[in-house]
Picture 1: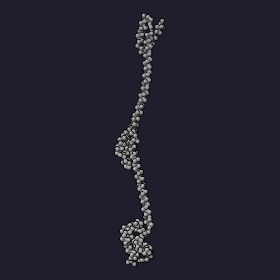
Picture 2: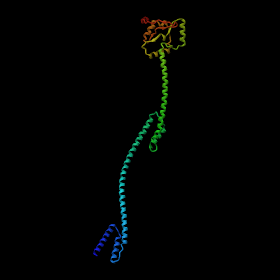
Picture 3: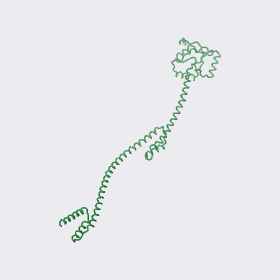
Picture 4: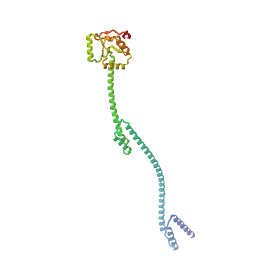
Length: 305
């Protein structure tokens, strides 16, 4: 009997410890009822005690599940917080990079804007002031409202218009050059033809024609100035052309020289001393059209004096 009592006390002690550990508040009430029934030697039903203990156990298990869930949520929260911190650091780095790229982008926009304005100021491309102002406004919303092609469109059109004008101008200049080259070729051909003519026939006015008819009627031999003399060999072509032009404008190139004056020693020596002219040989005289004997150069200039 003592063993049974001791075993009962041990069980009650274990229940008290479990109740204290599990915070079961109805344990003392149920244990008190148990002792009262025992003292009265009345039968005690453990059904109510067990039912209340089972409900308390269920609540404890529920709390345990909640605690485990709390621990899981806490663990996930800490992981999320750590990941959020990492993401914040990454975000800060991205913001810093974004700031740097935005600063670089603004610098490039400014450089591009200045380059376009400098290109327009160089001239050669006709860009309206309206297009320039629209370009400056659109630069502020580049890649937000406007693309780079939108900004370039008026300048590209102006460029192709200028290229078209340059091509037309080039075609006109080439056409003018071809015309000038053709005229130059004609003038060079005329010049070669004129130089190849030993005695080109100059234009003659009416007084010269009348004077020559009078000399022919009187039978006085004469020769035109241009047919009587010729340049010495070392006179340059340009000098010859200027002298002939001056003589032609003065009316002396086709002047009639009587043969008696041409063959006088004074005239011969005068021509020799100029270092430009010499008497042509042979000379065909008018009106007889017969050649005068070739000048042999034997006349001494001292005889002319």
